Image 1 (cartoon, rainbow, N blue to C red):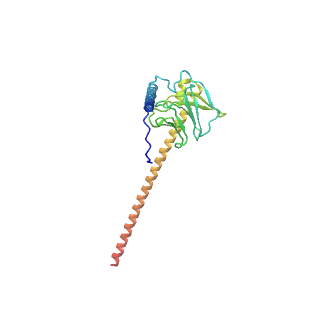
Image 2 (image 1 turned 180 degrees about the vertical axis):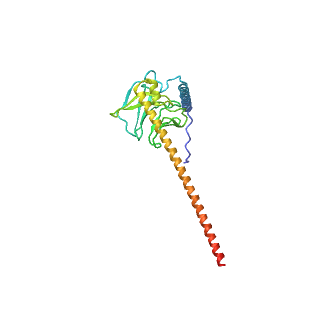
Image 3 (image 1 turned 90 degrees about the vertical axis):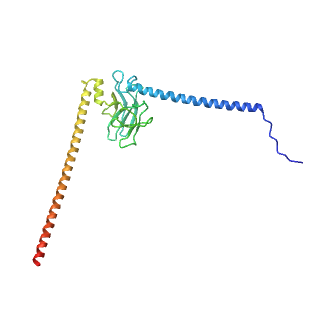
Length: 262
């Protein structure tokens, strides 16, 4: 008896046709998926670009420019140092963020990036005071001023004017545009005759005076340091001159003594 290898079964034309049809369907589905993905990406990118241009040109609503007088709204019972709070102000669709610095300073901003309107987040662990960060295109804002410190945003964040009551509760009472001080924003919205406008103006004046006094103190310290260094250098020069004179006198006496001996 001879042993032979088993013969492969005859090809099934029906099975091959079914397999080819399945391959075609998978390829078609894959192509459709890729096309849909590219279409979605293009649509979203175009929408972001148009939205950014519209906000920049003033066609769409910009945070800091509410329709009518912004309401006074309680946003928290208390915000502790080092904490942040996300809230909505001045409208229900306006994202905002409040930050309490370690030294107790309270700051509020729009949480909408001025680049392409992505969400702005608080990162406490960054730097000495933390930072406000937009993850879409790496935009970074100063936590104390709202000004741009890195990335593509064209301007700083609009501000939310916050006040703290004696019971620790925090209230939003107005907004300020990018580059506008809290006092300027509040007085523009509430009127220059309002009591709080005068108070904010007084605080702003005191702050400017403190900064001016600090700068003057630094200048005086630098001047005094310069004078001290000049006096030190003068003293060194005089000491060197006196030392030279003493050496010359010593050399002269030594020469005279040698002459007498000779």
